[in-house]
Length: 340
Image 1 (spheres, rainbow, N blue to C red):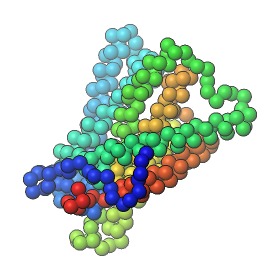
Image 2 (cartoon, rainbow, N blue to C red; image 1 turned 135 degrees about the vertical axis):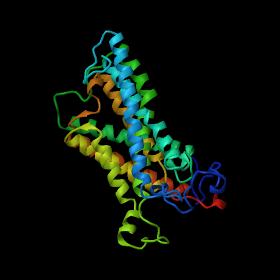
Image 3 (tube, helix red, strand yellow; image 1 turned 90 degrees about the vertical axis):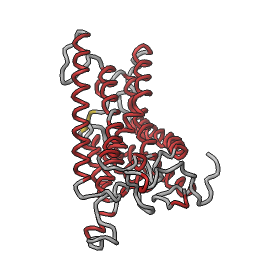
Image 4 (cartoon, helix red, strand yellow; image 1 turned 30 degrees about the vertical axis):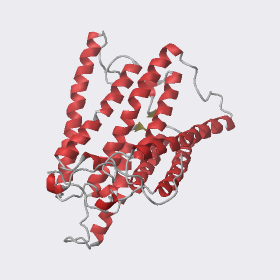
């Protein structure tokens, strides 16, 4: 992956126009990622207003898509039910992934027209997606996900369980269309969850807490609110509760969510979180497609071994990403104008 020595960060692309020539309010230099929504346009009521607007847009979009999906199902001779809207596991999976992906433009719209800040601040402290850094993180995610799967396989073999690690192959006729759907839609689905939770929600919470130079900025509560603790904890918790798991399955999702939130803060952007989330989900959905169990994907109780495997995955990935970020000089705060 090249020489990452030195302390000079990769050059950023052109940043949004300064506030004097734009109605948008950019965060000041030195602002960490979780505080990027704290601009000159910040008022205490803006974050809750933005959350309410986003939720309303999401619910409206899901309603429209649900009605459209139901009409399509009826025309195809299927009566929509709560368990199966479109009548087949693959169609239902595609609908779910596409619906989640629509969160991306809705979040961007809310950031731009409710918070009145550049949408690039949602992605990183550089005000854009750092594509080279994202590619590095995606490559680093490969051995981490491989370790996760390897641990699950080794534990399964060591316990001498009678069931197979993987179920019977469903056949290429069913597997290949499912794989194509997964490869096309899962990156958008995983990115949408990161943009909505590790991005929008964490920044909304992180915008509270007055800076030291402002009124009430020297209090204990303000100092706590300026830390990323609340944003990491809440975004990780919401991420966990939005998944249809129980027991150890929820523990696994919680570990993943908290780790991705911390990495987002530490690296100053969403690239590391999106990189692991996409690869992790691609592996999970592909294994489910191989077995023909798409109707139960992302559900169930999980196991202690799965939680341990997830913990090993995020620890390995986090250690590698932190090392690479330090070697590459990845920015963690908004640069000054002369650094651009």
